[in-house]
Image (tube, rainbow, N blue to C red; front, side, top):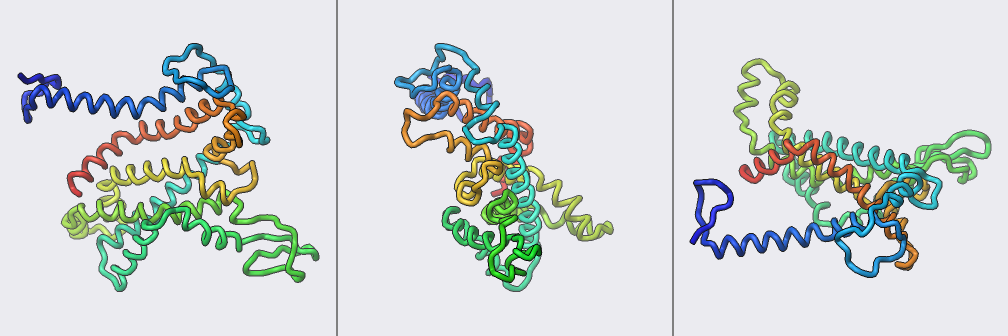
Length: 320
């Protein structure tokens, strides 16, 4: 006995017991994925700040007190939610676009041109992917920390490491490491290897005959790249940007290590900052509300790019 619930008349027909088994497995996977999300949403709708003592998936009360407190001032730091949201957006969008712009040109060069040391450079780009991102934080920290602007005792400005104050000291005005711009540089450096390799594999699948036909019609190299290659690669560009946006939006290690001023904090840093040393000191309902709010922009970006992302993933799976 077979049971067809899809409404399709074609394709392979499975026995009933196998269909039921697959559906049970799918339901088990769905429950394991949705359980923590539903629990966090339920917890965020509670007015109690104490640690939950039992599992509740159906909220007994619907209170938006925690959301109001988070949107007003998430932590004791003098930073508003709007400032945290702005920092996260500036960092995520800036790093995502910068990494995408550099990666697509580098990937196109690796895909189309033959030049000396090409294979060696591709291996050098691949090596950082083998290392954990936190392993690269120390050299990036030391490198960016060398760039500082100081006001010297005689009133002049010294830009290290190009110039230094006469007494070797001076009052610190700007530290590249302790700024959103410096963290953005570090995050772009860690995001580039994956973006380059992800885009190169896709660009390899675009027929070169299209570019040759454009060249015969009189298009130069720039016109071929912007008017032929980029539109065809748009789905994979959306996938690369979305994956990078998620990583940058949730990035915690680099930002927590590099930044020390609360005015530069991001939403992910604030979420961690809400956890105290002991579980009883955590405002659990506000923590859950903050977690829900932090996840919303990712969902919005996915919905905005859904068509391109699905197209890029399915096309990549076929071409790969």
